Every structure is written in structure tokens, then in C-alpha cells.
Length: 203
Image (cartoon, rainbow, N blue to C red; front, top):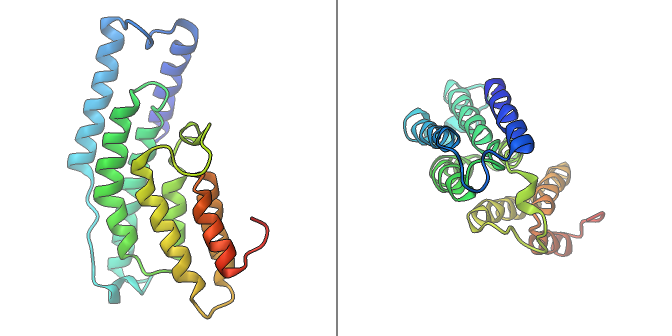
């Protein structure tokens, strides 16, 4: 990840100082961004593998199956972060195709939906949400501006509903974390739905 940060930082500095990635790009600049996109596509199509296991294995955080799936999930999240690091340089449609349509929808969402509802599942959601550039939610009023993110925000809402129906009082703190994620994504209708139905305060 550090190598990706360094490369993006160098490219961003070149963009800020010389605008080499804007307008009519030079052949070297265009070739660089195309090479980055090709590498991203290869990583998503070839490197990502997240196994699915029966719930009885995933209920036990100490099981080898849980630990292996969690490791693979974290690797995929790291790749998503590396992809979205390029949000101000690589065309947005490329990032959405690779990061959201392929990586998030094809791999990460399946894992999230099959995870037992609880703190571990919420931690996974937080790791995914941390990958999204803040610029994606600027100048947005009440819902994610990128349709592909609505699948994720709906999952957060469904998870919040499921946790609110739990008899454990401690789940309210966990739900609060989901509400913060939804608020940051500007999914304000979902926040209002949970707050009003389950009487949360401070949102």
C-alpha cells in the first residue's frame, strides 16, 4: 500500500504543478494511466479470492476458516483502497467499474452479506467504507451520488435493522457506528429511518 501511496503522490504532484494528466495528455502520461488501469484490472480479476464457508465456521472467530476468510477479505479491501487512491487521476468510470462493479459487488458484498451479524461484520463494513474518497460525497444532499454505492448503503441499513432487533443493549453502540457510516455517505434517509424507528439520539 505504501508503494501505491508514493506513486499516487508523485503523480498528483505532477498534476498539481504541470497538469500533465488533464486535457490533451501526452503519450507518456496517457500510457502511465492506461498501465495503472491494466494493473488494477489484472489484480481484481486474478489476485482476489475470498472463500465462502458455512455459518457454523464463521460464528467462531478462532476457526481457521474464519481467519483465512478474514485475511483474504482484508487483502481485497487493501486492493480497493489502492484503486480508489487514484480517484483524482484515473477516470472515475474506470474506478467505478473496477473498484465498485467488480471488486465491491462481486467479492466484498458477498462476504459482507454472509458474515454473521455483529461487531465483526460492522468492522468489515467500516474497513470498506474507509476506502471511499470523500470527494464522492461532496455536494450530495441525501443519498450516495454513485448508484453502485447504494448496494453497500442498503446493506448498512439492513445490518442496522438486524442489530436493533437484538436483545443486547451493547448493540446500540455498534448501530451508532453504522449510522455514522451512513451519514458520511450522505444516506440520510436511512439514518432517519433508523433514528426514528429505534429512538436513537444525537443523529
